[in-house]
Length: 82
Image 1 (cartoon, one colour):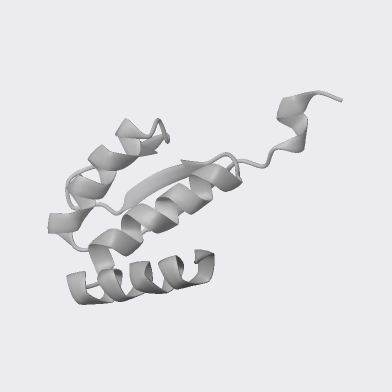
Image 2 (cartoon, rainbow, N blue to C red):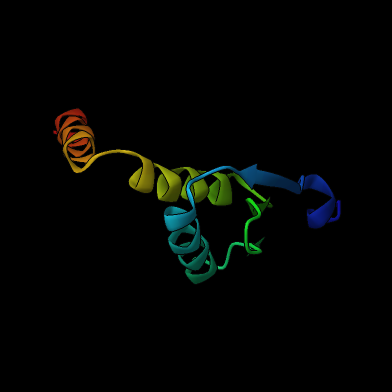
């Protein structure tokens, strides 16, 4: 079996505010997740595997939640592992 044939590639359009869009774009590039972003256009992200999907979710979540909500979520994660 060809490994690439078992992977499904999908492009996701991410609607986030203009200020966050560029920081999310830069972070996804740092993570080597293919993406593109043009002025006044939504962010487009190529999702090639589950890891990329989780990383996208995490990056967008960090921008969309308040610091308080992120701290609460982290506390819950620590309680689960402890």
